[in-house]
Image 1 (cartoon, rainbow, N blue to C red):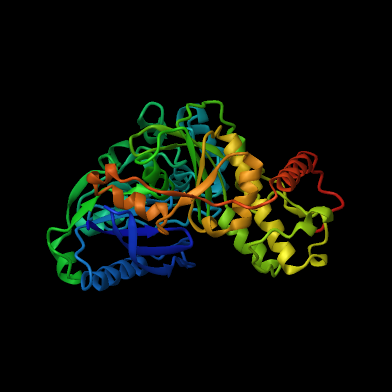
Image 2 (image 1 turned 135 degrees about the vertical axis):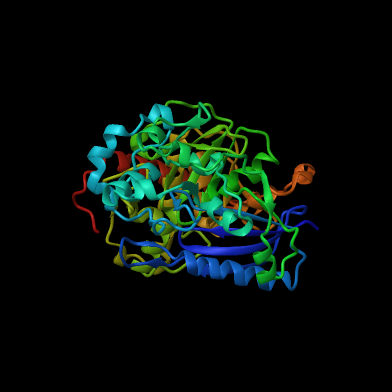
Length: 465
């Protein structure tokens, strides 16, 4: 057993998992909400609260498990600015804050083209370059105060082992700072005058060092506990399968975001207006991708419409002409600036029927994303939607391809992050389980075809909000 502690900070929740990297299994998990601090100078992440959660969790785990290594994976669109003392030069901005939109026009004048970065223009601070431009505009002193720029996973590894680094999967996650095909910085790093401040780039699999004496003493971990460079969360999901499958295949990483990644595709004709992008894999290769806020949409719709979970398809729904047309989170995804609409009054449906329509909508949005990033081959679903049988059934019918997940019961994000620390796991053979059997595929396919037609013809009139 090779025991790895994985720090996994998602946009909604943070998690600390103990993973056996040899067998690719989670043995223990702690979670906490990833709360924002809603106070000046702008909404920001609760870094001290997250750090306390990490330290307390490592202390707890060290009493039960022999932790041999630590890796970190986090959501993207997050950058940390450090001063000369290695402390925060400014609070870590929440990427959903709309402040950067106030200087969007000026930012676009220096922003590199999509062809160079594979990074589409996104709202708020979803482009890290937009965050930095806005911060430097709002706080002119900050440009000189900042000594080091690190991406979010590497901030936490720095806190653990004292070594500053960066890696391409986080730099390549729609930041505007990276050139995926050139495997180098984009022109924006010169325009922002930060190229010489970005911490050294290393592979995600790099061993940075061991935990500091202070961390060892505080947590009870062995002083030789290794700390690895870390990885962007969607790319962690992809990495676990790149070590097990031959492309082409697609990975659908689900959480707050649904991120569709096309492994083995060399497509370059992506449409930046549809939230497509080039992610960067652990080996450094460009990965055509497309995303939308599926987890956020699920939570919103289920709560707003008091939907009742059901696992079996309710066939009566097909005759009721009930659809949700995009987009619930209209500032992101493949149908931006288009407000969502029901084709029937949702309150005339049962709570179970509303749930089914919601799940079908999310699956069809995923199908759209897979098409936009030119995904081919089998589809592997990761994260919470793996357990959603209606979602998986519709995804299979809409795509006409095999939809599966792993059989370990662990999330690909944690497993992929753990594998950064374990090279001997290359011979492990993951088992995949079909997630969508025993459904009327003809009826589901007809529903998906109708949804596409309605979406294309969507005018916004005569529908219920």
